[in-house]
Length: 211
Image: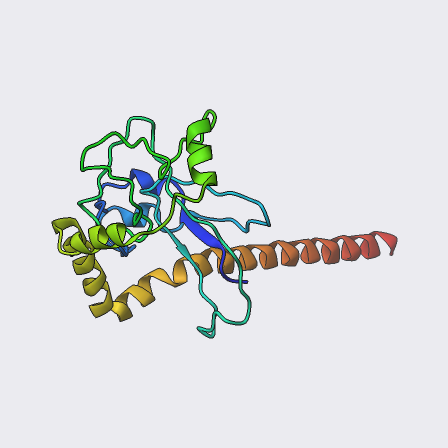
């Protein structure tokens, strides 16, 4: 199958990947320490996955490159701690095109960024129920205005670098899940072979004793 998220266990502890990197090369820095410890989840309808923002992860694509055969609807988002601050001027975010009037450094408190834990806020629910939360031209202009920020340019640089080294990335990253699967298949095969040999030995011993 394909389309399921795949993670490298404990990769959020790595010291090599900085926050602006888009793609990760698993043969550089301390990434080889995590490259073979793969965790894969296949969520069902209604399931929710939450992971650390620094966790190295990917989604395995369709082998033939065609994603049109089977489709799924997924709602993605980002969860922030209760003392987070608005950082809208640093990165272009298509998810942040609303008319919330928050300024850089403001506390992240707004119906556009609703509290969900330990319980939602009644006034925020009412505001959203009235259809006041959504994209706007004001938000679009704000998003466009951040395209040339240092943080965005760093991400674009990371993206361009990976595209230039696409062949190397493919050779390094794609096999890491298959290495584990091949290892599991080989181990299972050897275990079955051992059991077969044991049965043969038992039959031969019983035949010899019978004589």
